Amino acid sequence: MARYKKVVFVSTGGTCRSILAKAVFNKFNDIQGIEAVSRGQVVLFEEPVNQKVEAVAKAKGYSLEGEKSEQLTMDDFGDDNLVLVMTDILKKKLYEDFEDAINVYSVREFAGEAVGLDSVYGGELPEYGELIDKTEKLIKLVIERIKEISKDI
Image 1 (cartoon, helix red, strand yellow):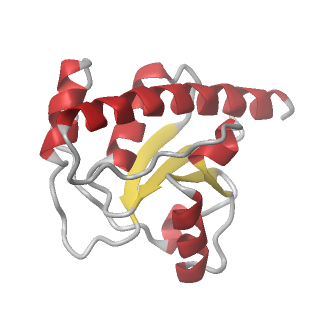
Image 2 (cartoon, rainbow, N blue to C red):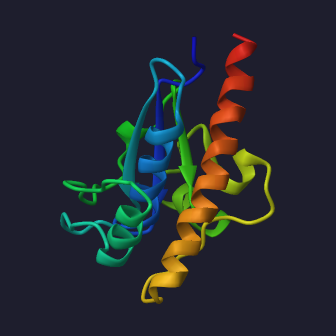
């Protein structure tokens, strides 16, 4: 049985990194009973996926079709939810906006790595390709960590 029922990936606008993290998680996840969702910390209106991340993701076999930004809300926090924010700075901002938030970690913190998933917004396609590679590495570590935590339950 998994410790968490839902993993909530959170980026600034919810149109790039969090959607990509969700797609990577869904591709490599083999834990039963756990769902992944993508949220943005600042979503004024629903937006489609960033075109550059969509292009490089498609080249690597990920489909982001139909994905759209969605605002993070207090409903995304709970005992059974793991909230993974792309950077430590976004984590700090999240606690400013949701002081009662629980189970919140930066992706790099939860994965036990030194570097998070910084924004490449406005960058060139190779930068988006590097983002996918970093995301795959971190999300695979996240999945392994969830398995380790779940063993103790």
